[in-house]
Length: 120
Picture 1 (cartoon, rainbow, N blue to C red):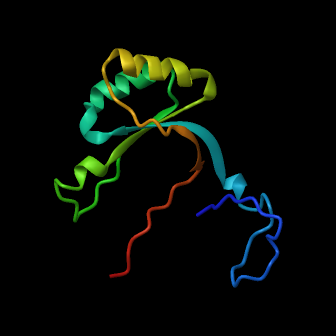
Picture 2: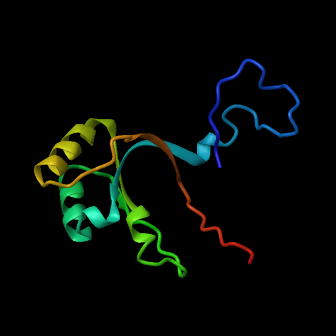
């Protein structure tokens, strides 16, 4: 997990161990992301629109064994793109009537994702 913060007193002892600036960020890339509710779009249609508009990737929402139908509305597709293609992808989504979350921004995405399992 990466936490970005801005503080003048980052060395103050608060019981936490902080890494040196930049010591972990090399494992992540900053990318523009567009979040779309899983129930708001057809998977194949979304892939076609996003990739034709220049998206780098479309990340499917994770599925867990204990997920129910009530959990499905809280799942999101994530379209990953460069800043250059961001506007054209949003335009294509609007043209096709696919809604997206208004809080789209830059995100830190790992180069190598690791699935974490609970130890129940």
